[in-house]
Image (tube, rainbow, N blue to C red; front, top):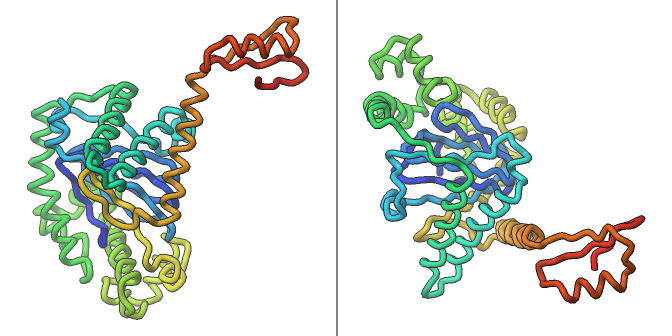
Amino acid sequence: MSGYRYHWHDGIEIQLILQGECELSIDGSLNYLVPNDLVLINAGCGHASLRRRDDCLSLVTHISPEYLYQLGLEPDKTRLTLNTQGDGLLRDSPLFDSLRAKLCLCLHSLKSGSPGASIAARGHIELFLAEVIDNFPLQSLDKSQQMKKEAYRDQILLPVIKYIGKNYRKKLTLEEVAECAGYNRSYFSTFFKNALGIGFYEYLMRCRLQSAIAEMMNSDKSIADIALDNGFCNVKSFNQTFKHNFHKSPNEYRRSVRNKGPLLHRLDRIIAQDDNPIVCSYLERYLEESAVKQASNTMLEVTLRLRADEATARMLNQLAQSEVSIYLEGKSQSKI
């Protein structure tokens, strides 16, 4: 995405952070995501993201509403819950290892180009959704409240977001945008922050920064020209704001991020650098970790707490099925 824009979809979006840090605003809640974080954004939920590090990579999956209805899910009536932000134990749990692996398998299937690639990809996505539903209860939506929210969003919030998107390069004030929305300054300021999770000027600054980053990556314009063309009053202000948010100067950031971008894939197509060796290494790692943990979880671990010698243990192990693992307990444990 070339610009910072609060938006929403009719379907579901799933974000998996592979590398770096990302700020994600979802329906008035600000989330700070780190590697391995997995977040599901429901249909109609407003969101906007800002990469907080130059090496940020994410795997983003979109699932259309038509496909969700085919599966018996009604995105306008129910909500799925999935967010590991700030919960390291949940993020590193076997459940989320399995969920991450299913997303990676979906991408691998799409990349294969085989006749059954699309079917295989859908199979992995369906298993992903089934696992989410089995472990996190569906939330039912109140139809009247949902209709009120959508009307409020489409009639008030959307025009404001579009207005900022068209004019962020100019000198914009809270008063001007509040007048555009038909509200006084105080009410609009509270309304905006409650809806997006950040204040008006914070949102405006993110729009300008994200646009500046896009120009830094895709043009040879000077930093000074980029700063002034994106609404910053001078280069010093731009440099200070940029370094505060990304911990690097614009020039340092430009050198490190050129020709890099987030990985994005959909159920019907792949976009961006899916053959990037860094990305491939992350995907392979997720698959390997999931396979190892799944194998260990399906094994029946039996500890012999008796006076059995090692030969007896080996004999019992040979008689047992492959899912049985026997440990000898003594001064140290050794796996047969």
